[in-house]
Image (tube, rainbow, N blue to C red; front, side):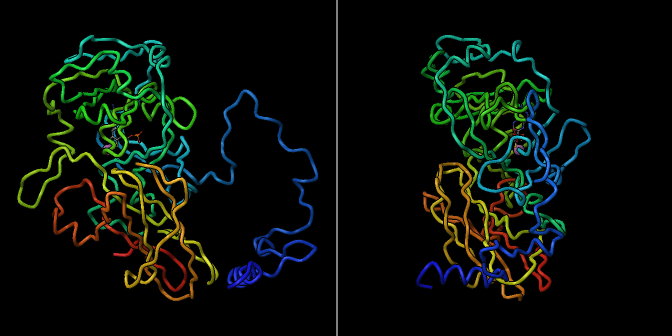
Length: 412
Ligand SMILES: Nc1nc2c(c(=O)[nH]1)N[C@H]1C(S)=C(S)[C@@H](COP(=O)(O)O)O[C@H]1N2
Ligand SMILES: [Mo]
């Protein structure tokens, strides 16, 4: 292809579309019950402005919802996934952010909420929300991923991208840096760890190394331009960019500085990785590089053969994504996908790769590399290193099979 005209003819031909004439495009919408006549919704006034109301998506998008991932004996505990296969770009709309609660969503009155900062500090302080809102703040795009995301076990038949990988979401988080708040209290010389505690019935607590606390930790009160959703920690949560989601304590009410880790339940009994030799890896904070093809992906079905844009998401808890390779032949050959800019640190990156489906079976896979040079491993390497005892920190390369009839499913 040497010029734009050739490229356009190629695209139209491979899409199975006719050329665009003066009368407008003869589109495939005619086969979907549409027509090029002026439609009825153009012939009369539309619905009035939605003043004094919160806008919601089109009723035609009503199927784009979170899905339950796990249920527990306690009614408040469980998780729901983001439908990654239905989203575009890198931002997760607030109503589709995945959820993981250990004891339900508390109903917190922000006027009565307090943040206590104490322990090895020079000045113990209690902050009201209005105090935190007065501090210098940042707005940064970061993903939050549960360390239980993706699966060491074989996913159930029919699993979608969201079913397997949807315990990850990506928002713009706004609030003061934790370092700004700690500058108010002063940090004691012996302080190496920060205990963060939630105000939910789980009183979820985690120990955070002081280096992370002083680096890029955010005390977020807003996500994607509005105040946090109740299920994301309203009115205040910790966001620890790139660290396992469990440490981004929601409904944050207390920070205690100490000279050693606090050895809470969530870092002894839970969120440790049981190795084949019976020992446990503890404090495995960073979410390593991972990628997933979201189109075409499990549960979807390709129609006509011809041109498709393969698209997906890549991320790393260590920094920026530098490369995503895509294979359409089960890993026999790989080619570089285009990374959608801006490519941000500890943030989802959208990748895209052109593909012409010839109607045969195909196996699609992707693998990510981050700025530290770390390459997402294949399952065999991961299992050889860590066994299959742990439910956490799985980031192996995953494939989708495309069948002759165009249906897409998880490839074992
Ligand atoms: N206070 C509190 N913080 C919490 C939790 C919780 O149950 N209570 N769940 C943790 C876990 S395991 C994860 S993965 C993330 C999920 O954040 P999200 O629900 O906003 O997606 O919050 C973390 N912070
Ligand atoms: Mo989690």
